[in-house]
Amino acid sequence: MEITLHYIASLSILVILQLLGLVWFNKNKMPARIIYGIYLASIISICFAFSYPLEQEINLSLTSIPFILGILYSRLVPLLVFTTIVLHAIFFGFDLGFWLACISTPFYAIILWKISPWFLAQTSNKRIQILVQTSLCLSIVKIAFLELFHIDYPILDVVFAEFFIQSLGIGMLAFFTEEVNKSIQLKNYLLETKKNDAIEQMGATISHEIRNPLTAAIGFVQLLQAQSPSTEKQSQYLSIIRSELKSAERVVENYLALAKPEEETFQTIHVELQLYNVLKLLIPSAQRNKVYIKQHFSESHIIQANQQKFHQCFINLIKNAIESMPNGGTLCLKVINDQQYVRIIIEDDGIGMTPEQVSKLGEPYFSTKGDKGTGLGMLVVFNFIKEMNGTIHVESEFGKGTIFEIWFESSITPTNEIEIIDLKDLVLS
Image 1 (cartoon, rainbow, N blue to C red):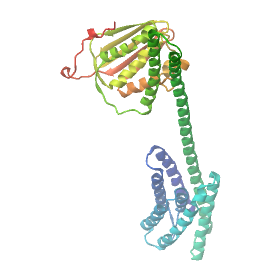
Image 2 (image 1 turned 135 degrees about the vertical axis):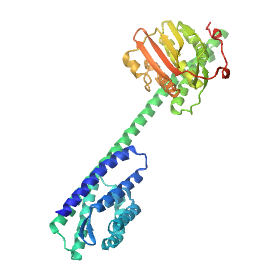
Image 3 (image 1 turned 180 degrees about the vertical axis):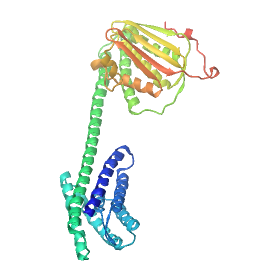
Image 4 (image 1 turned 30 degrees about the vertical axis):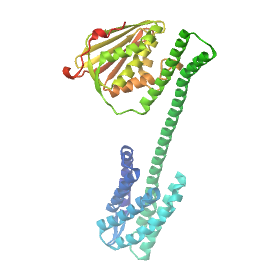
């Protein structure tokens, strides 16, 4: 049973290589056909190395397994024919088996290549059956060749090895291949489904978020057209229309910021000056909500960041803090130099959040505002702060308020390269 033992040893290595190949395939970014070609060339080498010398110029091996699998699944005809012939010459020289391989290998390859499209159109179980049947046919041809040339061989050993071990081997490897294909198809299907769900949800959210301010703006335009309001009323209506259109514009900007991130460009930023400019924009909103803003700017701090993203982050954070106090309250803004870091603290005494809500901050479409929010504002904040090499920490207690603490590395820009600002001018009236 020496031939059977050789076949079993060869098949064991093929199975191990198949499993290792699957791991490599999942982690490697090379094209699938190249990876599969390298794998097939490797296992053909293994088959030749574990071949059994039946006579001086005749060797039996499991080479037909990777040969059949490779052509029917990937149609790598030139590669497999060339590899088989060259390896035969390397392992055994230019013997009778080499010349037979030169004749038979291209012949088998052409037949398999012709039936490959039909083969791939079959079901998974049907393909495995076809592969086993093809292997049996090649085994019959081998034994017929041995009989034709009157080569002495152990009949039971050869028949068991060729018909059972080889058929079992190609069935096992085909089964593994089919399972991998199913896994890849399932993975692609799930990714496509998630992508479609995300697009559907995004479309619905955009529609909802933009429709609300546009509906309000259209309503006031209709009031202006239908009535003859006083100048004061006109000014009030136009202010509301402008505010609602700005709201719609911010939704679009948030989506664009997430979908098409720009190349990072950092500038030298006066933290207090940028925060002061943000507060000036949000004073009307704070006054409407009866929110008193306390600022603590003790000294001027410099960081390296993207000015536009920094501005947008703190507009979102401070606006959320103001809106969390619908019945009024106090918003405290501090900037503290903590050795090599600049800490920006935004503290409010609003409605606060539960631990579960805090843990979900920054997730797409999660909002504490219910139907009134998209969650995109906080997603933008978390993404932008990360892109600017900052960190964000949130503490909140439901019913008592929230503290946002943002850390940036302090800049060591020389004083003569920056414009000194007077913090006395940065006091909100």
